[in-house]
Length: 273
Image (cartoon, rainbow, N blue to C red; front, side, top):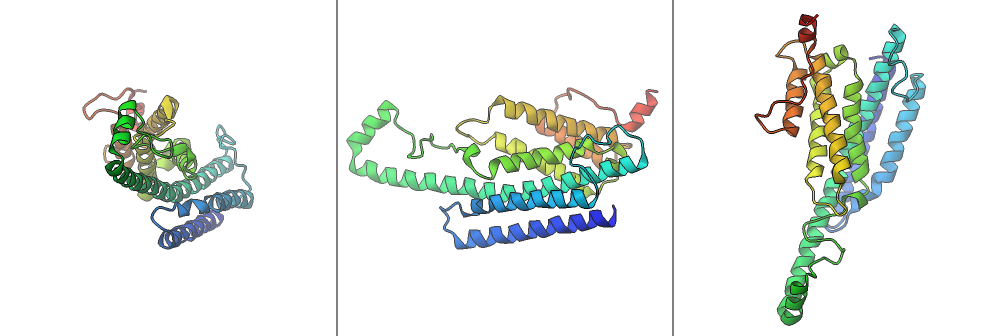
């Protein structure tokens, strides 16, 4: 990486540190039933946008991921890799901070439901006949309008930034040239597994309205694409990228199921020539 890229990396770590510290302070100062950390999301996203614009300009890059993608020119290749790195760093930090805030929102929603259940139990002890009639008629919704055990994920300020960040990490990995992906630091490519696990975990949350089949389908396709990108980058069975590919495939399929696709690694591709 160039000196400017290193400065961009340090700068975004500064942003991460700023908002993680702010998150901890808000958590410590607000009550358990208050969704305090959500208030920092607009400022956080604004800082990320300004960081991206600032460093794309400093490096003389456009934010279009397809620019230079089909060029063999060495300078174009470097610009492409720099652009992907900026996207990966931005979306990784976006995912990390947003997931902290989303976790706080989910915890707060669960606590509020528990407290309402306790209040309802107390009311039932004093108005048993009315409560029994309501139960028979199916009136079991909470005051929020949600069924017990459900949340409105899409109404939580951190939900979509969390999803967009996780998907962005996977998209960046898919865009890396195989030779660059192979030699990427383990800490960098492990971000892919965290992003994939997060997307899969969110799919298990009972939400009203539900996330729907489109959410599941698009994320499964993206995780598959990322797995295929890691397989293409691998050369030997000991390569970390191959193990990452296998792990991503295991998230989507039963343990002993055959994969629906088998993107060959570069050694296998050469043998077929």
